[in-house]
Every structure is written in C-alpha cells, then in structure tokens.
Image 1 (cartoon, helix red, strand yellow):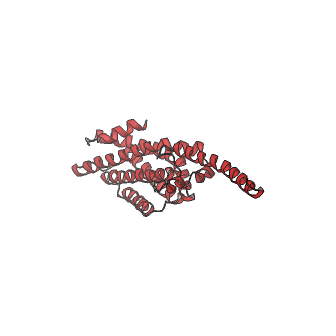
Image 2 (cartoon, rainbow, N blue to C red):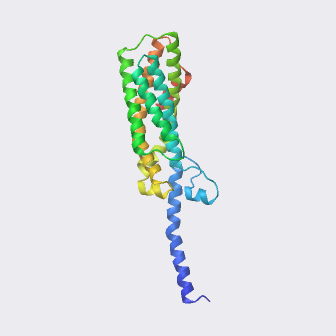
Length: 236
C-alpha cells in the first residue's frame, strides 16, 4: 500500500494532468479553425517526429506568396502604361518581400506593414491612371506586358481570396495569448494578427484595381487571361 508521500505525489500528478489537458485540447481546436493541417499544435507535431509548419506559419507564407504575385502584376501593369516610377515602387516592395520571406525566419509585422503600404500605394496610382486615361497608348509589346500583368495580379487576388477562411479565426476566435498557446512563436503571432487586420482591405483594393485593369484591357484590345476574370468572380 502506498505510503503518505506516494499518495501526495500521485494526487499532485493527477491535478497537473487535469490542468494541462484542457489547454492542449483548446490549442488543437483553434488550429483546426484555420483550415490548415491536422489541428495538431507545433509541440505535438514535434513530439511525433513530424516537423510540420503551424497553421499560423502557413497563413503568413500564403500571404507572402499572394503578395509576390500581386507586386509582380502591378509592376508589369505600370510598365505597360509607361508609369516607370510606379513600376519601380512595386519592384522595391517586391525586393523587401524577397528579403522578408528568405531564410527560416518570419517577417516582422513592421516589415509586412511597409510592404502592404507600398502595395496599396501602387494600387491607388494604377487606379487613378486607369480611371483618368492618363496612360501611354499601348503598343504590341506593351499589350503583352499588360496581359502578363493581368495574369499575375489575377493569381494574387485569387490567393488573397483564399486566405479569408483563416483570417476570421485570428480576428474573432483567438487572442495573442491563445495564439501562443497553440504553439506559435511571438513573431508569427504578431505577423498573423497584422494579416488578419489588413488583408481584407488590401483584397478589396486589389479587386478594384484588377476590375479597372480588365476594363482597360477590353477597351484597348488587350487579351484578358482567364485567371483574371476567374479571380474577380471568386472574390465576390
């Protein structure tokens, strides 16, 4: 029969397990809300020997990938319309993005904010030029560049729209404490929070830009890639 010391140790272990189990379950539930992976936390994945990215990490990487497509498309559109300064701005943001997504680290929220700000500034410049008609008359070469830009921007809009299912979970269901509890590091949690706050507005602006660019293409006899029209239909 266990002595008094053994009984106290067993009781303490039982209380500790009871406190830990709900927290672990909560972390798994919240990861499943993102629609990424199997719902296991980073800690659980590491324990099983599978080095899989977290749901939040996937959200951040998908956001970076969407912006790579967007900035490439914006640069091509601006170049085709003779807006070299705007094209350079998009390329500058793309350079920041490449640096942010390189290596194994996660870009800080401040870097993401800088990239997002430049991307939105380019969108505003493009929309202003497209709506006012203050663009260089298209040539055969610029028409192809513009069409390529539509394809890339359309792909970026499609990828942005695909982020939406995960954004609501960050905004509505999780706070910073529970993000960390779910196995995320502070940098990833902060980046995901920025994305949840900013991506919906950025998507709206990009849809407006793409809409005007498609209209411009049709008016000027420029081929409109199917991805551009499909992206607009899917973003509604």
